[in-house]
Amino acid sequence: MSADDVFILIDGAATSEVPARRIEELAGGGDRPVAVDHEERVACLGVAAATRSAALASLEASDFALPDLAGRLHTLSEQRGRKVLLVAWASW
Amino acid sequence: MLYEELGGSSFTVITVALDKSADDARPWIDAARPSHPSLIDTRHVLADLYHIVNVPTIVWIDERARIVRPNDVGFGTDTFKHITGLESAKPLAALRAWVRRETPAFTETEIRGLQRLPTRDDQQARAEFALGEWLARHGRAEAAARHFTRAGDLAPHDFTIRRGTMPLRGIDPMGPEFRRMLGEWTAAGHPYYRPLPDTRG
Image (tube, rainbow over all chains, first blue to last red; front, side):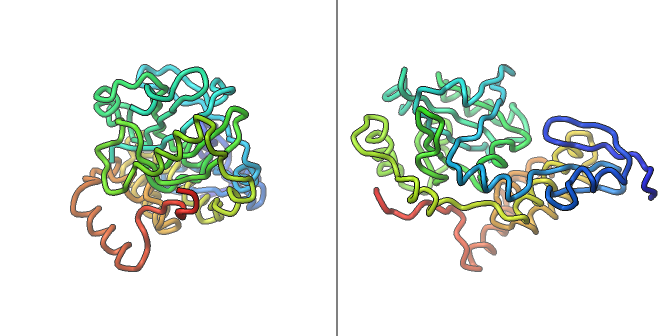
């Protein structure tokens, strides 16, 4: 593998194509976790533990936009002014 | 149901299914016919934002979008009543009291004391999960499995990864492989569910 090999880079919902040598730079020299599949040439940037921990400890509920069964997006922020019971569940 | 009892202008429920597809969650949502938002999170966006490591997990969020009770094991809507094993009456009574302003929620100091924060390994595991989920969705099952396995090794307490990826790997999440994993985990002295300590009822 060379530094010029092109990888698909996943960052949240977005994907882009980048040369291999750019992946570590984009990860901020180890700040953000990066998962790499060298065979498939796909990499994924995660979110740093420090970033997540600071957000959680701030007690500000992070906003999200997720679809319902019909594909319509809903956000937490559109519920502002109401108390919210947030429930994560799964069929498994 | 809880939402019908308490919901309205001052309270809502948002359920988020950490499932591999909307179709996996659909039968449960159709059966419950909820009138509150019932969302699908195939990429585990919520699990990452709120450091959710198993289901069902509940978080109380107030009118100003502040977390007022951190992650707890929660049973309380018909959407997930198929999952059994923990008593729901007491946490539901606490929730009713909070919504009706009969009792204050936790203080900020109490909440921070009860929060679990993600480690580097937790976040590396989530990056491995996200890579695996993308690979699985693009038909590269073998490559996906490598990253799901690595993610589970990094965060063995994270059952949104270890159990939640079983359907993506063609494994029955209620079957022998899950029971073996659960047996090993509990035999080593670890809890499968991690409710908040019973500080306030």
